Image 1 (spheres, rainbow, N blue to C red):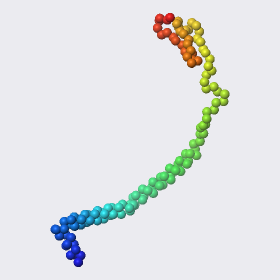
Image 2 (image 1 turned 45 degrees about the horizontal axis):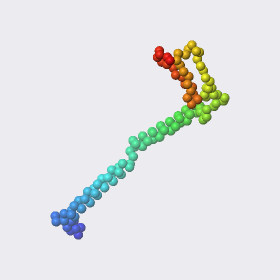
Image 3 (image 1 turned 135 degrees about the vertical axis):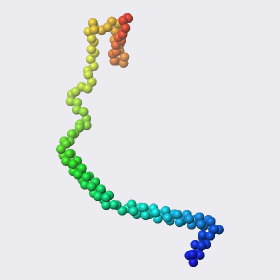
Image 4 (image 1 turned 90 degrees about the vertical axis):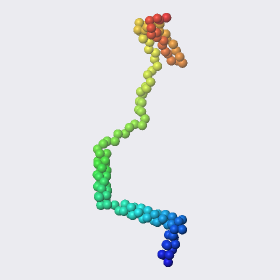
Length: 127
């Protein structure tokens, strides 16, 4: 009976059925191959298990080393606010005028928005 069904599907006049049969056959073959590859990859080899154990031992050693180094190094606490015990950050606003003979001829003292500024001629032609 199965043989009759297979012969009916594989006749030349049933090209659509033959096409679907091939697609199903290739799909099953691909699924079987992929399953075999995944199943083989799930088993760790002895070499991989040994490497994992070595790496875990190394991590344990490094963690112990970090703890030992942290015990040796003192903890330095940094202040969160600057300490300004009576210190002046800005200099006092005093006006310093140099000696009259040190100033070039033609210099002028001006004021803009309460701040003094000076006009000093750079060339030899002073007004």
